Image 1 (cartoon, rainbow, N blue to C red):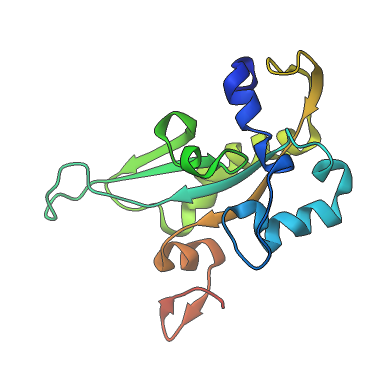
Image 2 (image 1 turned 90 degrees about the horizontal axis):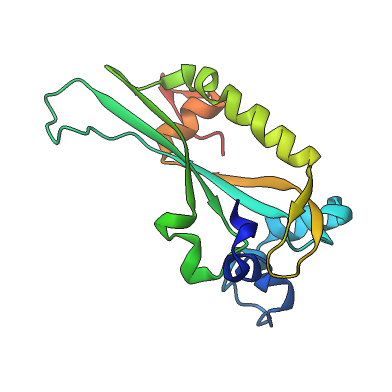
Length: 171
């Protein structure tokens, strides 16, 4: 658990005490999405240890050959509570799924994501008695998925939109 390290636990709450510069987005904590969650669910926003997550997925060919008909789709959760230079460090990224096969998951990606969505719902409800190594306190840990990070074809798969016979982002 990420709160078992005193240094990491402290880094996960830095955003609550930081000095934001008006009109500048130096971290996702300055974003409208972050503020919307705080406003809509104040009990979530009042606990700085609650995790703000992003989900990212994209396919690649692990064999470095375009002729090979095999794909891997890692599904990664990124924790945005961390300091800007730590958010994208490998040790803080969570590989939640690795979808592999002879073709991309396409519209069936929801079947693969279903267990992850169930876990995210459980995290939204909260995990009781999580120990914070920095403060020595126990608290109920919650998490919210703020956004997904995908390329445009993946948005089309996620939203199932068809524009001129091509899948596309609905916006």
